Image (cartoon, rainbow, N blue to C red; front, side, top):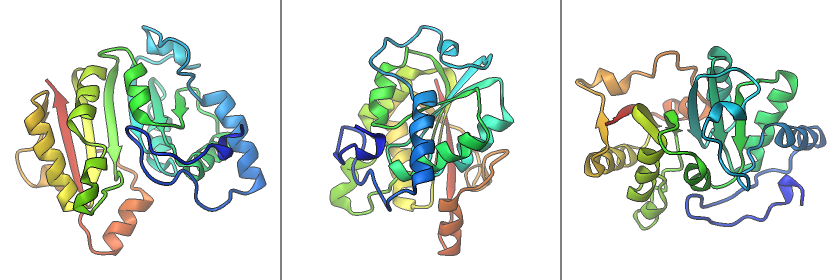
Length: 233
């Protein structure tokens, strides 16, 4: 089965569409080539040293869940060649955009996974990540759908297991209810300490932040993003 033929389905950590507009033949070819080169195989046992997953010599490891078109992930992976980045994106169109970019400019410190992020989190060795980014995730704004939000007690357990002590979980959103939801969930969980002492700490973008399409849309529509950082205790 080709990557873009994978059926749409809800899994433990992913709900909603996996496909948008039909991708162009060139994108489809780049997607196929890229997944062969960059996709992680979760049927194999995870290595104790994540560095063996990368062609580059890397000494730190970052995970981005739901990278969209890949603007932020590509920027970070390019700026930090000594860090190994893993990006998760189940949406075929986003992954195709990322693979098209990598077709033009390969990166030896990047791997991807195109399915449910909870499967990857469960596969990773304990205390193996230095950071996890969850940036502008689907807010599921209707209250009856809040249980679908990726920030949940079960997924915070997964974050706590996969992050090293002192590792950082970063969450960005333009939806106030989801920001409050995340703050309350992390406080209730107990493994994460919010790194903020004043409003500027969570209203200012992260250092080196390149911006994303979603952020630009939110600002155009009058929504003010929040940038939360939590340290794994």
